[in-house]
Amino acid sequence: MTLTEQLIATIRDVPDFPKQGILFKDITPVLADPKLSERVSHAFLAYWRNKDIDGIVGIESRGFIFGMKLAQELQVPFIPVRKAGKLPFQTIKHSYDLEYGSAEMEIHIDAIKPGQNILIHDDLLATGGTALAAAELIKKCEGNVGGYSFMVELEFLKGRESLCADKKIDIQTLVGF
Ligand code: AMP
Image (cartoon, rainbow, N blue to C red):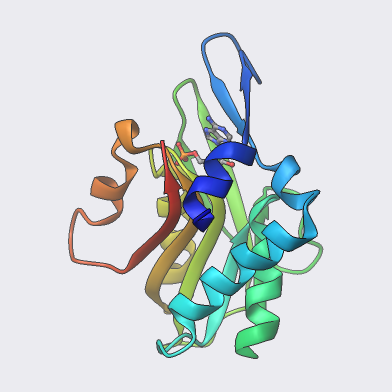
């Protein structure tokens, strides 16, 4: 089986979570399978190994899992981006709109050096709003967004188009639904 076929067979659909009408793509069965999760890690590493990445931003919380592993393998810093109020040191904030209301994300003020090329990683790309908010934080730190990687892409939500709106950017996804 290809990695994509194995992910399709393993990722669990949970209807109406966290609210009515959302089909949640649950990656915990992937995490529970060490051989499969190792394959996932290898796929991320193979893609980014020879690209010029100076650090990885992982988006809370499922972006921490493979993001941290990839950062170790590439021997670059792992940088958590978290919901407001969770990071202990001085932070830079960015507010962004959700379907209903808004949310705020933060990064530590010293996490990125000007000019660094940063990869943004999360478990899933839906509308792209969360990843774009992480990109805004990187820009506020004077870093460059060097690309995006996700395990899952919900293609019908066209998040890829939002991420590429102003310029062509490297986006890796392992499985699309
Ligand atoms: P978006 O900002 O719309 O691209 O949403 C992406 C963020 O929300 C990621 O952090 C995902 O973990 C989470 N997310 C959105 N939709 C889903 C879904 N259907 N299943 C699992 N996670 C989701």
